[in-house]
Length: 316
Ligand SMILES: [Zn+2]
Image (tube, rainbow, N blue to C red):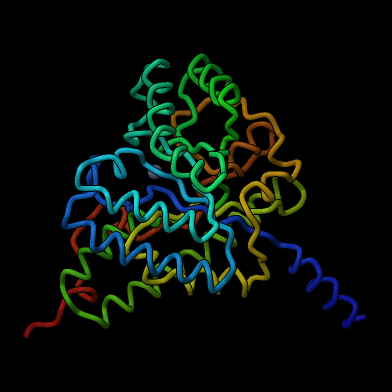
């Protein structure tokens, strides 16, 4: 009996799948314009580490590109990085031209953002005999009014796009800001401690969203993990991928993940927020969930507050 139970659990664990997606290519720096020359060297190193890990773990990643960051005189290295992704057989999606918040834009402005973003990546993908399939909204803002939401959705469909979803996030952009400040302190032990804390939080978010989605849908769908192209992820990506494997997940492409029926549930809910899909499915299916149960990063990370004493470099 115990053997059968263990086998069932193992079989069910092995059925878990996740698509890894990375936003803000070619590099999630602070600037909204092209990569600065100062960023370029870091960006190359960050992407090198990410790509090595994706190759090692055989992960069919989709990366979402901010057009401006690969479209300025300084950003030849931006488009070089994108070519590296394509050369490795990875997929690139459109993440708009300037990463503006669509809650602040009109419908024609959003359409312009989509088309201009496409002009940057479509030629690169075409050169490799491929086309751009996915679009992801900046901050996952999918339209704060009914008209905006429906008009843009129709526009994307007409241009042949699938909307990229995501079901797990780990506030990695907030952790990255804190991490960069800790790195500036040049204390290796604290940096290591912070990386472990980030991994522990990532683990708790994977478990939280797995159980949320299972509760809403009655089963665990293929998950879509949202990460950003940043320094912190570059430094821990192997551990993040190992974490998924340890929990029984197999890596699949975004197109495979989204072929699950869960992703055909109509998306009609209007919100100004960038909710993960579990919360959106809950609204569509009228399932009550309590988002307050979601684990939160520490306040100082959320508020870009003072680095706590334990993370401050010891006096020299
Ligand atoms: Zn983004």
